[in-house]
Image 1 (cartoon, rainbow, N blue to C red):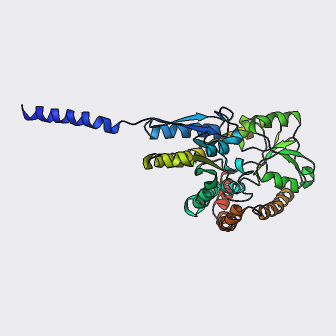
Image 2: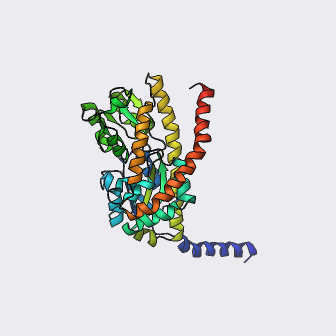
Image 3: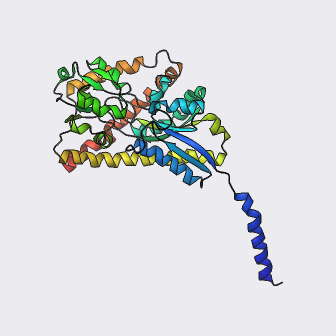
Length: 357
């Protein structure tokens, strides 16, 4: 036998011996979403997360995605993952605020952190540790998994020229925004996405906020309420999360845990890029079509700000985890506010002036 035959035989033997070592069992994981399948930004993001984990694991983790209502209601993601009815979830943390009040800090607080600032607190300011502690009693492991960025204040059927025009309005608004609006004379209700358009169209509500130009137009809100005000006082950078059942998380290998962790990181960047691009494109389309988006009048902004301070200061009272988080979060908000006013905030204003928009 010559040398090449000998080496060839050895190589074939090595391949035959190696094959069983690289064979992997496929593990199927159910991921439930807080938004409908295909819904711009948020529903699409959950679906991409599932595909990303499956691809990054080479199919060893086969993540099956279920949109809101397919397996559990959109507001039931936290409970489904906590109990093990689903393995993973993608949602907005504050959907569970009725059960876990501290989730508000990991979504959005009025006049709080922007998308980048909130990620900074989570990744570098101890926020992840506080988040883990918040979710531990509920058998959940959380990860940052997107952000819809600064949101719009809402669509109104009639123009808002002063604080007087807000009195007695009926408005769909989520999170702590409802508490703020109530303090300035607005009657509020929180409706799920599919119910917003019909409520606004039929007159059940006089105004509605949801996210921003991209999603709001997809919902049809511009068709029934021509006056668009921005920004929202209560959601300057609302975060999305991926949550994993803790028993499932602990059963995964370190490699598969790393894949999920990094898939969430990648999906977070994907989400922010999608919202930044599509909001700008749709906003321009609105303006070209004759819409005139505007800021709230100064007296409305002042009233919302004063109301927000009252709401925020009272929010943590009685909830030990919120009380533990609050001072750290607010101290960081104030640092970001000081930097943001002269850095990014002024940059945005100067840029608009330069480009005449």
